[in-house]
Amino acid sequence: MTPLARIALFSLLLLLASNLTACNIVGPAVVLVHGPEKTDAQFKLDPKRTTVFFVDDRGNKLDRRALRSTIATTAQTILMKERVLDERKVIDAASALMLVSNEPAGEPMDIATLGRSVEAEVVVYITIDRFGLSPDGATYQPSATMRVKVIDCINTPARIWPEEPEGKAVSVSMPQRQGDAPRNAGDAMRAQDRLAEECGRAVAEVFYRHTTQRRVSEINNRN
Image (cartoon, rainbow, N blue to C red):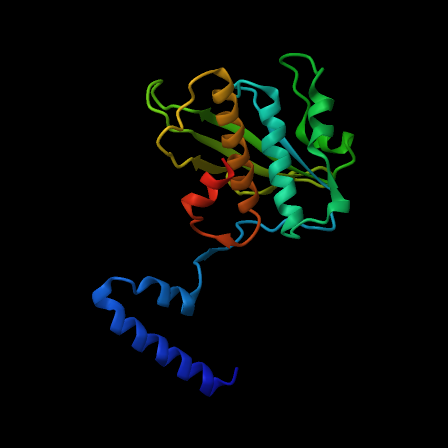
């Protein structure tokens, strides 16, 4: 499109927006011009380096070990789909979880050592601060808080990102629909699985440019 044509289109859209103001439907016209708002990646992973995702739950915030796997595999899958990481350079998160499954209690493996043990150069290290379906034991409101670090397994200093030693805080809050509250143990497990998937997506979004606010229906439709 030529510059003149772009100016003409922009003028037409502005005119349309002004005519629709009384109808309170200016939003779609604005979206046509600007598109959805985007958030840049907070850190860019190197696709040439072998990378593994590892979720650590030393505080036992997760009821099931499988939730750790869901968070990690969701994050790695999204980043491969978005071509942030080369699938040939991603080590399946299950390898790291299997490695630590029999480690002695109270003697956790150093993260850089863990990465090297599964032949990774970089570990995306995720710790769980909070994970639950209710903040007070009565209200159904799934939410979680995690911290994310990027650890170099080969070079020193090991922590590549962020500057804060405690890691980058990442929070998730799930939208609610009427009738979502679990009615039995099976429902609760499925709700936890959905929350774990959203945690994985939130971790992935740290590392690529994404739409700032996804539609609530997008999450609900996956439920």
